[in-house]
Every structure is written in C-alpha cells, then in structure tokens.
Image (cartoon, rainbow, N blue to C red):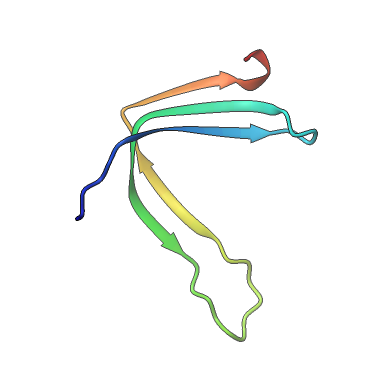
Length: 66
C-alpha cells in the first residue's frame, strides 16, 4: 500500500480530423497531486479533475512526422 509505480506516459494532442498534431512522451512518471472540483447539487459548473505528474524525462515530438 502507498507504493507508487513509475510509468511511461504518452500524451497526444489531436487536430480537428483526429490526427496526432503533437506528442509528448513522459518517462518514469508518477502522480504527485490529484484534485477534483467540488460537486454541488445546485450548481451547473463543469467538473474538472487535475493531475500533477513528476517525471525524469520529457520527449516532445511532432505527431505528423511519426
């Protein structure tokens, strides 16, 4: 319990046609903070979750070249 496994994460930004425009590869990543919106029964706000990730290496590539 309370052990964090480091992982490789790939984040892809898609354009309007669904093709990869940019790509980020995050190596040996682990979550450091997770927050979410307070949900209110009388509110109509959009729920947004946020995750902060620490990592050892970030590689940025242009998705169209891959």
